[in-house]
Image (cartoon, rainbow, N blue to C red):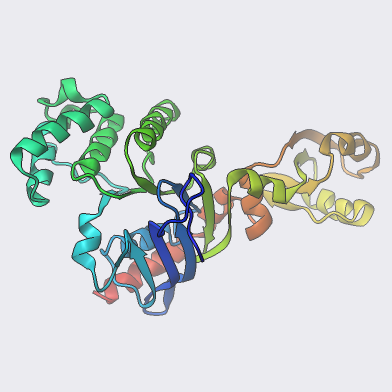
Length: 336
């Protein structure tokens, strides 16, 4: 597969993955994924917790050794060229790794020393990245006094200190309120404009995935579909209808017998997809055997894409992944 930059020119992929797999005992965390990420692209992995997103990032960042397949990041093999990969990437973990007892400036200086940046270069770069995320005036404050959003911005700045070619963001806004999430994304989009960098992120927030140039939906360790957000939504082609009725099971049976529609329970409501939903609703009220208490119609969203390709919404998938995660953790501990 030939990679192209965002300007349409031929370019070596920033990330190239072939058959990448990771197994922990009997648990297949990642089941042979294939994809490429173009230079300068914002590429998203969308899926529920436990789908294999973080495991994939950990393999690409050389923190976990694959059990199958291959991957190259910044032109370097993640197994044979671990040190070269690490010099060319920045990583913001899902959980904070900042030292609360140090100032923002001290956290960044320590990172610069780990990467061997000369002091003069590090000082200029520190000001640049801290100003980029709006924290230059707080550089002398202890990180323990920072809000969750400020800590996330500082971690992004730290990941940029050594001018990486690829920045990995593992659930960059998890646990933050919607307003702070929006603010973080303002910084991420500005970062892409100002820095010659590729961004690979994982998320389970649908609105966050909308910012990506392309999205790979991953479920149970496999990529089920990969395309732009617009193309993915267009592929669904139907509206999403949700009903609350006096007897949901009877409503599901009636939808099947009267309209040949396969509905299911998702997020506490009878849910199905149909073309021209607003035109269908009057017919629904007239012919459904069960009294309707409430109805909503929505244009295709990324959640509808996820449900179309996986058979469940992302919230339902997360709820059902609890047992899988427990098995995964137990297998991982046995493998240590």
